[in-house]
Length: 318
Image (cartoon, rainbow, N blue to C red; front, side, top):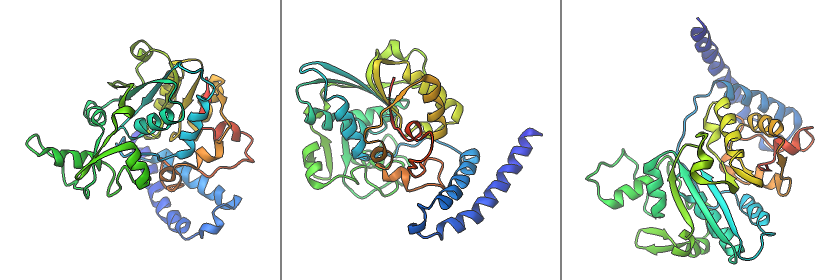
C-alpha cells in the first residue's frame, strides 16, 4: 500500500512539474533573482529532489570551477617549503578534476610535494583516467565498443561517455590545453610532470575502512557525485570522508543537496571556509544552470539567509 501511494504521489508530482516548469521557463532571466521568484524556484526544486530518479554518471570537465581551484591554492599557500600535502579526490571519474588540481597546485607551489590519491568506484573508469589520454575527434557514442574495437574508438567513447556532445576540454583555452597536454594527431595526453605524485585506486567512498586504506588526508575532495545519491547515503558518506582528514584538514563538497551538506556540517561542527564562498558556489555553470528543474543543480546564492555561511560554503575545515 505504501509503495502504491508513493507511485501515485510521484505521478501527481510529475504532472504538477510539467505545468509549473512551463511557467518557470517563461519567466525572464532578468526577474529570476527577485526573492519571490527564487521562492517559487525553491518550491519547485524541493519537489524535484523528493521524487527524482537519481543515478551516477561519468560526465566531467577540466577547469570547471576556477574559483574552487583558486581557493585550494590559497589554502596551501601557508604550507612550509618542501613539505608534503596529501590530497584525496573521490569520484575522480575520467581524471579531469584530478589533473586540474594537480596542474594548478604544482604551478602555484612547485616547492611542495603533492601526493594525490584519485579514487572511483569503477575500475574501468579509473584505468581510463590513469592513462590521461583524451580524444579530440567529434563524439562517437553510439553504443559501448566491444573488446575487438580499435583503441581510438574506445578512447573516443570514454572521452565523451555521459557527456553528450560536450568535450571534457570545453572550458579550457587553447593556451591552457597546450600547458596541460601533449598533442598527437586527434588526441591529447596529460604532461608527465602533472602525472607525478598521483596514485589511482578503485574504492568506495562509503567504506568505513577508507582511512586504513588511504591514510589521513590534508584535503579531501568529494565533488559532484553525492547529489546522485539518496540523501541518507550522501550524508553518511560525507561524515565518513570528514573522519578521514587530518586535524585541521579541509573537505571540499560541491555538488550535493544543500540541505544534506548543511545538516552534516552543523552536526559535525565543521568550520565553513567563507573565502571565495560566493565565487565557488556560482563557479560551475554546469551545476548552477539547471536549477530548479534538475535535482543536481544548486539554488542562487542568497546572502540574507540566516544559515548562508554554512549553506553556501563548498569547503569546510574539519
